[in-house]
Length: 113
Image (tube, rainbow, N blue to C red; front, side, top):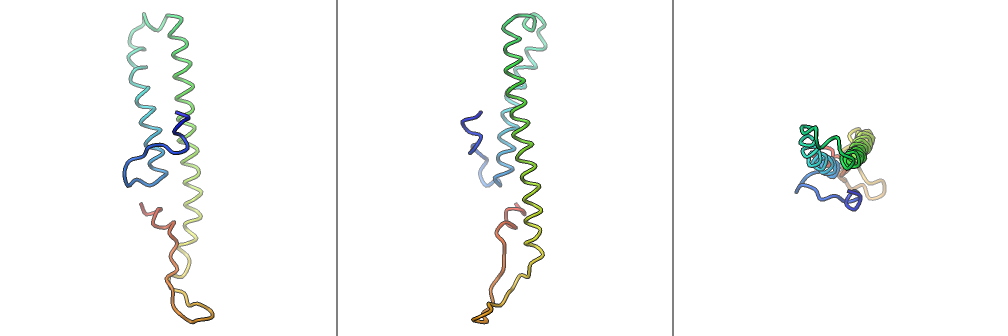
Protein backbone atom coordinates (compact mmCIF):
# COMPACT_ATOMS: atom_id res chain seq x y z
CA UNK A 1 0.00 0.00 0.00
CA UNK A 2 2.71 2.48 0.92
CA UNK A 3 4.51 2.21 -2.41
CA UNK A 4 1.56 3.70 -4.32
CA UNK A 5 -0.04 5.97 -1.72
CA UNK A 6 1.62 9.16 -3.00
CA UNK A 7 0.60 8.48 -6.62
CA UNK A 8 -1.93 5.65 -6.74
CA UNK A 9 -3.15 4.25 -10.03
CA UNK A 10 -6.43 6.01 -10.75
CA UNK A 11 -9.38 5.55 -13.05
CA UNK A 12 -9.07 7.35 -16.37
CA UNK A 13 -10.44 10.93 -16.37
CA UNK A 14 -11.18 10.90 -12.66
CA UNK A 15 -10.33 13.93 -10.55
CA UNK A 16 -7.24 13.36 -8.38
CA UNK A 17 -9.05 13.25 -5.05
CA UNK A 18 -11.81 10.94 -6.29
CA UNK A 19 -9.20 8.69 -7.89
CA UNK A 20 -7.30 8.40 -4.63
CA UNK A 21 -10.46 7.64 -2.68
CA UNK A 22 -11.54 4.99 -5.21
CA UNK A 23 -8.09 3.39 -4.98
CA UNK A 24 -8.22 3.22 -1.17
CA UNK A 25 -11.77 1.84 -1.12
CA UNK A 26 -10.93 -0.77 -3.75
CA UNK A 27 -7.97 -2.00 -1.70
CA UNK A 28 -10.11 -2.14 1.43
CA UNK A 29 -12.77 -4.16 -0.40
CA UNK A 30 -10.12 -6.56 -1.70
CA UNK A 31 -8.94 -7.37 1.82
CA UNK A 32 -12.42 -7.47 3.38
CA UNK A 33 -13.71 -10.38 1.29
CA UNK A 34 -11.07 -12.90 2.44
CA UNK A 35 -11.52 -11.75 6.06
CA UNK A 36 -15.25 -12.44 5.84
CA UNK A 37 -14.48 -15.96 4.66
CA UNK A 38 -12.04 -16.43 7.55
CA UNK A 39 -14.65 -15.22 10.04
CA UNK A 40 -17.19 -17.69 8.69
CA UNK A 41 -14.87 -20.60 9.55
CA UNK A 42 -14.47 -20.72 13.35
CA UNK A 43 -11.76 -23.41 13.16
CA UNK A 44 -9.45 -21.09 11.24
CA UNK A 45 -10.07 -18.16 13.57
CA UNK A 46 -8.82 -20.02 16.65
CA UNK A 47 -5.29 -20.70 15.36
CA UNK A 48 -2.18 -18.74 16.29
CA UNK A 49 -1.58 -17.70 12.68
CA UNK A 50 -5.05 -16.22 12.43
CA UNK A 51 -4.30 -13.72 15.19
CA UNK A 52 -1.34 -12.42 13.16
CA UNK A 53 -3.52 -12.20 10.05
CA UNK A 54 -6.20 -10.30 11.98
CA UNK A 55 -3.63 -7.83 13.34
CA UNK A 56 -2.24 -7.25 9.85
CA UNK A 57 -5.74 -6.81 8.42
CA UNK A 58 -6.66 -4.30 11.14
CA UNK A 59 -3.44 -2.35 10.58
CA UNK A 60 -3.92 -2.15 6.80
CA UNK A 61 -7.64 -1.35 7.08
CA UNK A 62 -6.92 1.42 9.61
CA UNK A 63 -4.24 2.90 7.31
CA UNK A 64 -6.58 2.86 4.30
CA UNK A 65 -9.41 4.52 6.23
CA UNK A 66 -7.01 7.15 7.57
CA UNK A 67 -5.69 7.75 4.02
CA UNK A 68 -9.23 8.22 2.76
CA UNK A 69 -10.10 10.57 5.62
CA UNK A 70 -7.01 12.73 5.04
CA UNK A 71 -7.79 13.09 1.33
CA UNK A 72 -11.42 13.93 2.08
CA UNK A 73 -10.49 16.64 4.60
CA UNK A 74 -7.94 18.13 2.19
CA UNK A 75 -10.59 18.16 -0.54
CA UNK A 76 -13.07 19.95 1.74
CA UNK A 77 -10.47 22.64 2.46
CA UNK A 78 -9.72 23.06 -1.25
CA UNK A 79 -13.41 23.62 -1.96
CA UNK A 80 -13.40 26.61 0.36
CA UNK A 81 -10.45 28.07 -1.55
CA UNK A 82 -12.12 27.39 -4.91
CA UNK A 83 -15.26 29.20 -3.77
CA UNK A 84 -13.24 32.39 -3.64
CA UNK A 85 -12.60 32.00 -7.37
CA UNK A 86 -16.34 31.91 -7.95
CA UNK A 87 -16.71 35.32 -6.30
CA UNK A 88 -14.16 37.00 -8.61
CA UNK A 89 -15.17 38.96 -11.70
CA UNK A 90 -15.11 36.81 -14.82
CA UNK A 91 -13.88 39.55 -17.16
CA UNK A 92 -11.26 42.04 -16.02
CA UNK A 93 -9.54 44.96 -17.71
CA UNK A 94 -5.73 45.12 -17.66
CA UNK A 95 -4.79 48.29 -15.73
CA UNK A 96 -2.10 49.48 -18.19
CA UNK A 97 -3.19 48.25 -21.63
CA UNK A 98 -6.94 48.41 -21.07
CA UNK A 99 -7.39 45.03 -22.77
CA UNK A 100 -10.05 42.67 -21.50
CA UNK A 101 -9.07 39.26 -20.09
CA UNK A 102 -10.98 36.27 -18.85
CA UNK A 103 -10.31 35.85 -15.13
CA UNK A 104 -10.94 32.14 -14.73
CA UNK A 105 -9.49 30.01 -11.95
CA UNK A 106 -8.58 26.54 -13.26
CA UNK A 107 -9.38 25.05 -9.85
CA UNK A 108 -13.06 25.62 -10.66
CA UNK A 109 -12.83 23.07 -13.49
CA UNK A 110 -11.50 20.47 -11.08
CA UNK A 111 -14.21 21.38 -8.59
CA UNK A 112 -16.88 20.80 -11.24
CA UNK A 113 -15.38 17.41 -12.16
